[in-house]
Length: 234
Image (cartoon, rainbow, N blue to C red; front, side, top):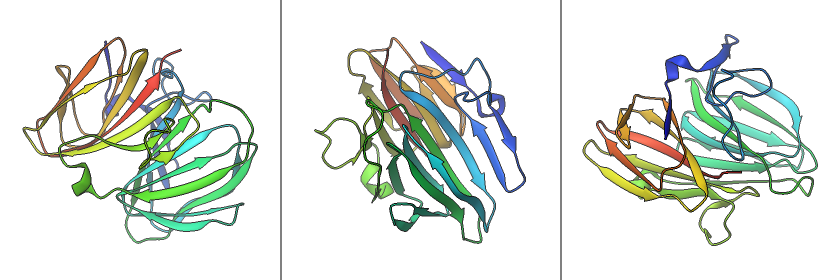
């Protein structure tokens, strides 16, 4: 089953400096019919205007993965970390028992990112933060694991969730077949260009919830990037 969630149909809000579109409804925001999938609690498509952002604010008991699509986000947190994460970079933050952080666009161009919230396996614990660069060329034509709750994915950012986040850059005509682990669903989003997912056409920035499918066949109709979350179904 493919639950197509077109970008134009997503709920969200426009604060002027921040335009957010929500692939998953959370805390009364977004479309109620766009429910969570397994541990996936939120998937926000955010656009930050230049020289704007969130000041210090707190989180707990959530795994937050940020995928930067354009520009760069300046991250600071209560653990003393400070870094600029640019397009091609991914960051993973474990809120654990509590962490405060800020996210700003200090650049002169709009910042585009996906922010993905996942339910942790266990509440509490020590908070942490990490980032890693994943060059688009290294993801060309094949899915690469970016963040994972599976310790065997040694090259991925570690997260404490029953999920894996993968990404690929595709040229028009590329086809990927990806087998889902037993008992898992998925959520897939495109960044640009069009793809078909098991025969369903997704336009740029559309999403697709995937359930009860053993294999996902992704065919690029145009040059694109895709981000795919494997999610243990409850």
